[in-house]
Structure formats: structure tokens, C-alpha cells
Length: 400
Image 1 (cartoon, one colour):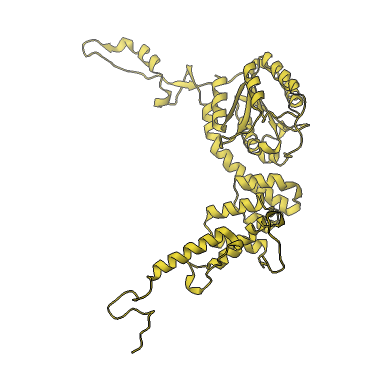
Image 2 (spheres, rainbow, N blue to C red):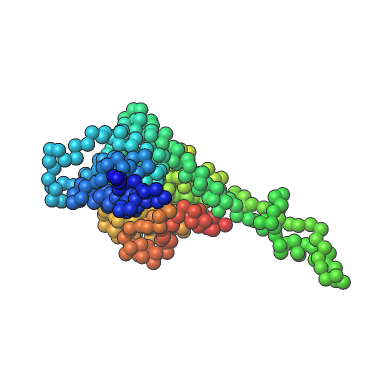
């Protein structure tokens, strides 16, 4: 009688002499995952048999997709020598992108796209119209477009602007409601309001006006009228001057500064000016209606002349006592730093409120000249790395 050891005898669910298939499958999957991490230099290769298919793909297909990107790490400087047959993938950028999206979840796709652009320079993703339009509009893609927009022409550039607009408008919608509430939503105890809500209820005024209705026997108030506060009406607008350092390290801050300036521009209580600078100054105040136009005019990189930019901003000051001067910079000055200190001192002495932002984003991380920041703080400037929402709250407190 012949016995097939791969089949279970009658009455049993598992073979007699082999590990359960699930355990073997798990072990193979573990080895293959390690092989994917280690790459082609691993001593043990992938198990390529059809019986090790997981889901709808084989590990060998995953290896090809990941290798197309990460094999770029291997070069002679790391001790690897490229040989004729090594890494001879037939994948192209469009095919690679299609396979990545087919096999990986969205969060992983975004990571791979980011590294393809940031680390490995697959700029074809940005210079091919169809590929560009297939990418997920997000903050990372916006930053890459800002970096590579100089290489874009014609239809590609128009598609890039559409993507920038999608991301910026989404960002503005998220920030605008909070900003309006922080700046325009301040209450005035001197003006009544027809808006009857608990938030606007003036308890002190209501009690004072109803004291005559106090019932001594029942020891309670009889309220015949509630009094509500009205919103502050700004008759004398505050001036907001924003100078933004466009050096490469400030990219996130440049984006958020442009969006916030556009939001401020739309508020009746504020008169907003915006300029960007490296060693030159470019005034973008007349473009604040469209933050996309602002961002597409930013040229990241180059030197930095902060003192020159501060002096330009001084020319925009009309009423120092009603002016908030915001400098967004890492304070790494490319010229004699005492000139920067003197310009800041002059702005403060004029009566302006000077706010120095070493970062304006939601990451909470900033690399800046700490000695310069402390020096400016000692002069009386407000120095901080804050979020856009915190900036709106700070301005709201200053103008009331």
C-alpha cells in the first residue's frame, strides 16, 4: 500500500510527518520579509515557488518594485560594483508607479513617492504631465513642485499649478475658520448683539440691569432681559507686515506664511503686506488674493540678507503703534549680524510689535540661530516657533 505523505490519512486533518502548512507558510513569509529588507545582498534568496503566493502577488514582484527604487542605494562608494546583469529591471517610472499603487496601501504609497522624489530624484514624476496628475495632492507633493517648478514647462506647469491650488485651498479652508474666530470673533462689552448665545452672554451686565427685579422673599432674580456682547468693529485697521525668509530650510514656513497672509488679507480688521527675501526682496502684497500666485513666485535657496529685508519692511510702516511686524526666518544671517540687530531694535523702538518666528508650521521643529533669537528676545521681540493657529490667536490678543 502506498501512502502519500502530503495527504492526511482518513480521519485526520494534518499530515503525519510534516509541519502544519500554516506554520511553514508563516516561516517562509518571515524569511521573505527579511529578504526584502536586506535587499539583493542577502545570503538567502526569495522563495519564488507559486505555493508561496501571498494575497494577489508574489514576493518576487515586491522585490522588483522595491529594488527599482532602493537599489539606487548601492554603488561603488558603498562597496558594491554594478555588473551587467545586476538590477536589469524592465520597469519604467510609469509602470513602477502603477505597480506601487496596485500592491501597497495609500500610506505606504505616499512614503515611496516621497522618497522617490526627495531621496532618489525621480523627477520624471514631476515633469511628465500624466504622472504628475496621477500623484496624490498633498503637502509633500506641493513642496516638491516648489523645488522643481523651474524645470516645468507648458501643460506640465499648468497641471502643477492646479495641484498647488488644490492643496493650498484645502489648507486655507482648515486654517481660515480658526483664524477668523481668533481675530474677528473677539467680543465687545460695550456693544450689544442680536446674536443670542451663551458664548456672548454678558453675565455682569445682565445681573446689574436686573437687580431691581430681585425677589427678597424667594431670594432669586427674575430676569426680564438678557444682555449679549457684540463683536468688535475695527475702525482703525491694524497693519500686519510679514517678511519671509525663502531659504531652503524654511520651505514649510514659506507655505504657511503665504496662506496665512492670504487669510489676513481677507479680514477687514487687518491691512496686510507680504514680502519674501534672500539677498533680494520681492514684495508680493499685490498678489495676496491668490496664495498660489505667491508660492509659484518663491525661489527657494540662495543667500540671506535679513537686515536688508527688515529695512525694506520699515518702509511699509505707516502707524507704528498699530503695526505688527512678523519676521519668519531661521536667523542665519549671511551678512554682518549686528546690522540685523540694529534693524530689529529700530523697529521695536518705533513702537511696532515685532514677532520673530523661527518656524511657522505644525511640525514643532525648527533649526535656527539660538544666540540671535535670545539677543532679539532680550531687545523686546517675541521669538517663537508656533503653529498658524497660535499665530492667529496671538494677533487676536494684540489687536484687542
